[in-house]
Length: 141
Image 1: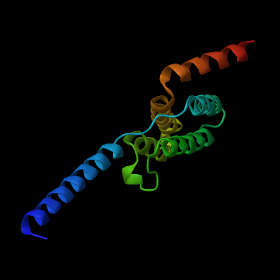
Image 2 (image 1 turned 30 degrees about the vertical axis):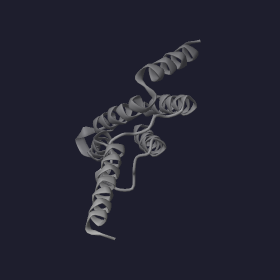
Image 3 (image 1 turned 180 degrees about the vertical axis):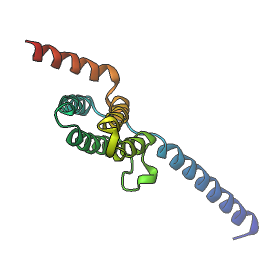
């Protein structure tokens, strides 16, 4: 193999590596969409968790965390490294930890708001609100 061919192979290899690295970086920041069935299932689960919050706030926050982890995994996020979790998830967990002492349920309420951001990002706020309204009508009947 002469020098020109070797140089050409090296340049092509570098270009392929750079493109692959760029694609990898682009994918890390994006979460894939959920199927319509999963969106509906997660929206219903979230609605039930919210309803439980009034009676058992700590248990509801634990369920919300589990739901958020499931949503993130289904969307392709890595959930094993807490430093790589979305900011909303980190804020939710921090708020839940601050529930001690005088704060009462305020930390838990703030955690639920952060989890709701994750749910809304995955299922859409419109779908979630629609299911909430439907559930409210059923309760009122």
